[in-house]
Image 1 (tube, rainbow, N blue to C red):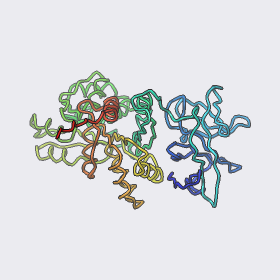
Image 2 (cartoon, rainbow, N blue to C red):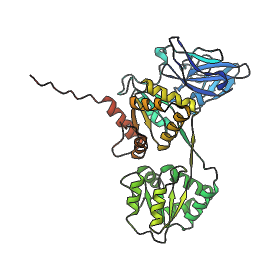
Image 3 (cartoon, rainbow, N blue to C red):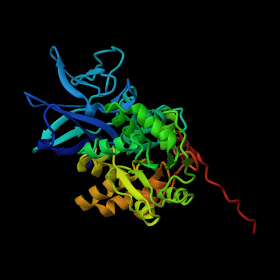
Image 4 (cartoon, rainbow, N blue to C red):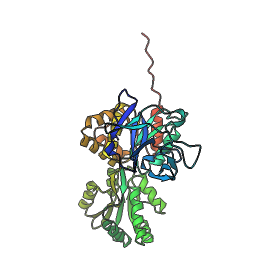
Length: 407
């Protein structure tokens, strides 16, 4: 949800009609993530901190609204801890309480009080950490809890804006057909772009009762992995990739493919999401191979445009120190939402004002293709821990002082 600031202690969040009954939405109020709830049947409004102190993640706006006796509550989607929406009190631990915010409706617009939180209800951060006083926006959804926890342990305030989520393909039949061909030995080689793709292919094989056959096929065939994540997913199965590419990019895959002949072969290509990889398939076809592509998962929007506008405005206003991106599809979603709302210039201003972190070269390339500078990127290992280390290193680096020359 977007916000409009004024000299008043109240922040306008959205039209009342935009709040669904018995579901939560998240708004950024004076730099704090606030979960808003509109509860039937009496049309009551509640505003509490979006931070779940048990899971240490900003997730309460995605919680389940219900009641326990006379208490209106929200249950966290992570560990299922419940909180009273009126008081913020935990229903599981008397020593834990969420911050609550005054909320009202004026002229059909929802407003939340923007006063600073009390010392006992600060957003998640540890004042003695290397990132104390820093605000990090993360676009990750799949591993958001992991990245949030690591950043919080370093003292950062974390605001989550999951831009996309991973979903099953709309039609499972092509994936099932691909897995059957894999198990029947009808593929000569397999190119694996993501760890998620590896796990989902094996998951489909398990559902079909062919897991052992799939793993045996992976062990016996030529495989190339783009970067460390699909290689790690194979190692979890007891399989070593034939060629773990040195460069985790499409160019790295094509370099690996140049190591052998492909005439009269059938090569499986596991896609990243459902977008075709024309460069790899074209290379294979021109080399005499038949390329058989498979999309074991797809990407779908994880937030409505209002929430993405909120992220863009926070970046443009300078309230975010670092925006971290972990998937190139997140970049597409961000720019598409900005274009739909006519705030392209605001987005570019925010990207210039905010330090931009990319988990690896694929994401960095997607950002640079859009004309963005990438300030933070791991040098070798492209995992969340490496991204965290680079963020800490960049934000704690002292500027180099140049000694003055004497006249």
